[in-house]
Length: 352
Image (cartoon, rainbow, N blue to C red; front, top):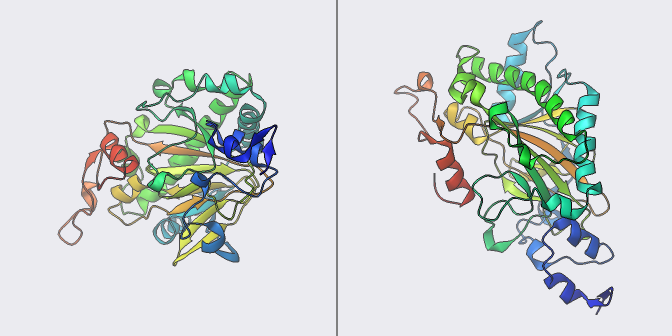
């Protein structure tokens, strides 16, 4: 039996190693991972990914909105109906703003002592998702994702709780606030296009979503190297609960989308923002736009990271199909309910 610094493999695996980053360090010289990270056969990436094909999801240049808004709206609408995912380029966010966001996030996970990271850990049983943590939702069969994460709100100011923002590195706050400022402009434009694509005025979907009360929840996903990437998943297959999700990844491949009965790797484009249509926009549009079913794989040798920002309703905000879209020919396909009730059902795998 292999030993790790005098301990048997079995003992090491049964130790209470709460964080995947620590498990990754223990297992890096092995060819095995703890059983709770091994997905069932119908989920294992090696068996379920269409190999050798990278999915070219729609890539949309959003810089030409003033020249040809009609064309831009058409591209975003088609991508949101057919794919539920697209990548935007020439979005106006300076490269250095994205680089700084990624730099401080990487430093938090890789250079800040573990004891300091634990100071902003999510408390067991907490209602909010905010904080540093590992498990997120009820997993079927007790399986776990190969990922650690940090959640905190970055907008609006009234929703921010700086208790969950790392104090180290010192430039963390400035980098995140700067990114939030630029990201809001991109989000406003996407909401406008989605609204126009439903035959509404440009402002109506944003208003139905809560306007200035829309919460921007940042999540940093940290997927350390995994000795058996063929058996594990970073994040299990899901749709996002948000209105939309705006995500920047690092250069390590990992995002997969389910389309036409297969799992595909999604093409990485430097400095593009990946846009996911989430459950709440599917509801607002009464099913015209589709939330994307996606998952994350992990790498044997490299750390993958991603920075999704989930644009969510406030917890008391009621979301349902926009009334103007409903008529006899198009009855409501979804119930109208408070977002907090939607979240509770989704995280606990209960019917909506």
